[in-house]
Image (cartoon, rainbow, N blue to C red):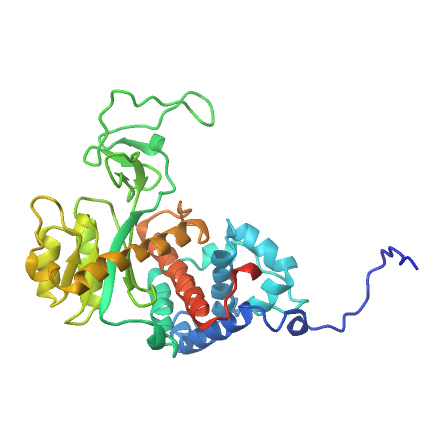
Length: 361
């Protein structure tokens, strides 16, 4: 017998959000991990808010929502709020009941400086390393470092001369600009949209673009990311950021793999000063690495495993939505990077433990 296509809505629902979510859904164990981390940050959240005035949106809910934005590649906070409003899975993960009203998308912007900043994001990133599964999968002796460019939220048209340059104008919303024959460099030009963005290219065959740099440091056993830095682009940013991360994270006696860009005296001597052995790919001429390092079998192993660091960059730019940042300034981008790589580490732990399945996302 054919059923009727009735349009009348039910007045009451007897199914809870908890019952709606499948027991084997990978967001269930992910939320348990996230809740453990957020519970450990309770005192830190208390210090961010006044004890007087109207109650704010719970910071735990805002952070869970931001994690969903990374996991599901939601392109904007406006779209994220819209999806949380009608998606029961998203409501359950954030902690909203079925009848609670959704907050406005501007809540993320209003909390950018207080909650979605570099300090809170780094704290969240570091607390992941205190999870019980971290020590089971992560190495604390062998690492690799590398950097990549993240396109800034600024166009070439905004890159004008520092000594009185103006944006192109022709009476239209998107004016035409011709840079042919004009010598443009970071020494003489600066972006009006994002003054911290610098004209950059990763190699000679790459197109120049306005971009800051993202740097990561991975451990070799499972490819988990142990440290993150964000800097401006210049000729020595990769080496400086790598040494900062090594000093902050690596212990004496460790090894660090890197590509040929790090084969220079500044990095090799800096790493050895920190008592870290540099397993750097050698240049054909003028290499700072000699036989004292390359003769050991661990050197070849590091050069093979170090390529795994590109997986994190690829994931962040495709799934994490950070091929091009939508925020202005390196401080905000740094917070985005830390939050994005935090999600990467949580998903990586899930893959290693067996409960994460990408087919559910």
